[in-house]
Length: 474
Image 1 (cartoon, helix red, strand yellow):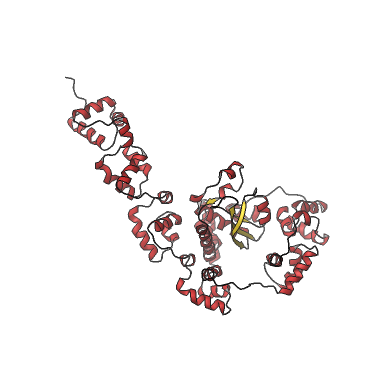
Image 2: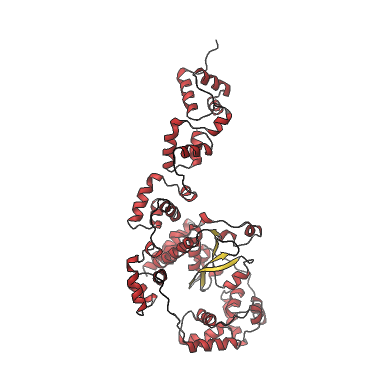
């Protein structure tokens, strides 16, 4: 009788490991033996040898079910458990299904939070902590915390409450004061919240908003008359409004035209419509760093018209500058050489319900023209005084919603430049994320907001922190 290769203890261990789910092939490789040697040991110990089909379908023994459940509820992924038991992921899934264990969503799985920690998360939220703060504590994303609360049927606070705003018990008082004549801005100051929070309270209580125009009807009629006589909006703004020391004059002019149903001129219609008296200022602004595209947008002409003006005045053309990064903000280069009002927006993707495109622009008409026909309805619009504010808010929102990055095949096929920013999500949730980060920007200031929420290098984070400290110290 040939000598046995393994001791009784070693054979007992082989049998145990096999019953726990390891295959004869795997054990053979680990122990430097053939699979047939391992099967002979199993038969000698009266262990039924699984067929290849059985092994693929049931790689985990009943004795290991509790262990699999504990590993999963401690935050281990299906893939990690499958590797530990040297089986397929479907085998792990079948064990969880047999035990009645509800599987985590894709967001929860990516967040990597143990199910055993759910009660603590729920308790923190119900005691007033925001999803954002809880996410920081558990080293995950706010969207992951949101999914956990949703799956456990925890009623979510309203956007204003979640952002440190006003609870619903204040609604009646706020609405009454607004109806008595207080503005959303004044109420925001009274209650220590942003005007947009007051606006949300009025909206959910169906309180009609007052006309918040700064300009009188007579003033608006004069603006429309000048525009219809051929003047550009920026020229009108300078002539009629700057002398009255009114800020955001250009946007007020555009609002007046829209309110009075004055159709805006197209770029081709406006070409050549810049009086020579404006040429000096155009050249000066270009020399200081503004692009021909931005100047064309301001003067409502094509950028080719601006180029012709520059050429006629012997102004040397720059190479195109498109820098729009954190480093450009820090260095004041690229699109951040000059201070320029820029808006953050959310548009729907035309023909694809449930798909949305967040982004920033200082000329939405140009942006739509460059959008290959994919821009649909506008759902959100927030204007900032500078491009850097809009850029930081956009980057925070895009980073937060990466889990929802998805786009229709048609968009991908034409290699549209905006593809990476498309999100497939619930519109209210996306708007909520936007309102949250806008509020955070107002609370923290530009540099503290950037270092807290924007992905960047260690050196950039340190520089933003330094600027935040300087800003706080005056």
